[in-house]
Length: 215
Ligand code: AP5
Image 1 (spheres, helix red, strand yellow):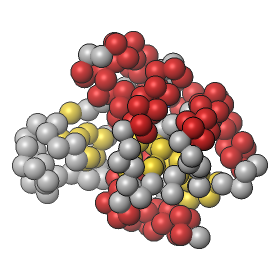
Image 2 (spheres, helix red, strand yellow):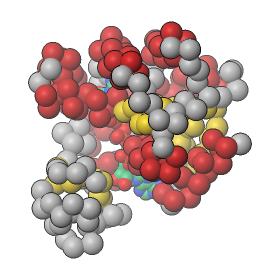
Image 3 (spheres, helix red, strand yellow):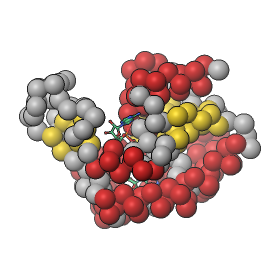
Image 4 (cartoon, helix red, strand yellow):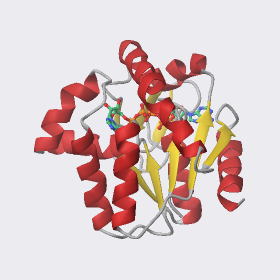
């Protein structure tokens, strides 16, 4: 089963994708994570993407589709792929259709996480991750059990994303409204969209997504 998790910055796409990976053996393909890895590694794609991402704008369709295509070609897609953060505009919808068709695959569901925009800035500005294992935390919603020490690996080093500032978040939200939300009607016309309340508790959101996938 191949699915898209769609929603604005901070809607919980990454959080829910990780849970589906653990619960269902699916594979998460996050273009944001891939791009951050490319930036860190200093690849040609990463060098081009760095400033664009820091400004909260969209990286070129060519760079993103190449990353996704390469990853699909590696195989090892488990029980299915969760596209997290891709597609993000009409061109990327067409690119995904083509990438899947070339590999004899199809898209099965588009899960839209619906959220009140008002909570998103707080969710994003407050989040941080373990620099060692990547476990996610939040200043207000999810602190490590022992302050300053990762629950999972014991590391004492944490990091925040450079694009998680109030100013950049405003740009990211505007791009979501202007370029990404308009792709929903394309998938609605294909009968693929399932809406899930992303304002509920994280566990409840997961249960609602699972129901949408099994329904
Ligand atoms: P990307 O990494 O995809 O970021 P994003 O879409 O802005 O989404 P986020 O990762 O910020 O949020 P999320 O929905 O995953 O929320 P999370 O689960 O972390 O993209 C970054 C950049 O890369 C883009 O701006 C662009 O430049 C570039 N890029 C990426 N893909 C691209 C593409 N396809 N084309 C072009 N450019 C691309 O949750 C957020 C916080 O809320 C966490 O602290 C979490 O614990 C908390 N939380 C989650 N759910 C709940 C809940 N139900 N209740 C309470 N708290 C919750």
